Length: 210
Image 1 (cartoon, one colour):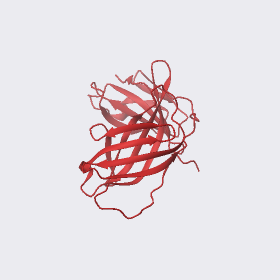
Image 2 (cartoon, helix red, strand yellow):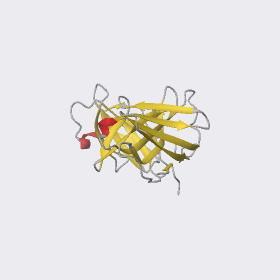
Image 3 (tube, one colour):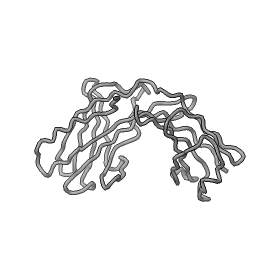
Image 4 (cartoon, rainbow, N blue to C red):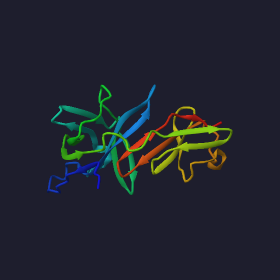
């Protein structure tokens, strides 16, 4: 079984004032750049704090052996709720030179506004290369078609400002755009392809839908 990220929780007793990291995951994403797909990494943790999510202020991702560190503040991180639990993190972890992220042991450090902190070690071992070729999305004449070997494919629609309007899980590789009943505000769409087993995904360029 391939493990993308294993957080070593070690539920030792600690002060109630400290934040907590219950679980985390990391995945690799391929986004179409100027001429070819570019690598990006996402990092999220399932967090808790006795004073609520608003009391959390900073999240660090560190690779001590390579001397790497990323800071994600409460102003910058992505926050979403799932099953009443709070996930925080970033979809923009990357090396400055565009190189692949090193494998091995990483460390997550979570700090709240009172200065209390907690940290957990984890191992990152996502495959170096995607097992699937980069997918594609075509929209023309009211029809859409995708070429993707990824097991899960979603159509993400955007408005004129670039905001996500709707996300639809595709059950067919081609069909009519009108079947999605997009709101009038939608002007474009992109294909988000994902392999949950390997924690690898790919996002195509946005294509006009009208």
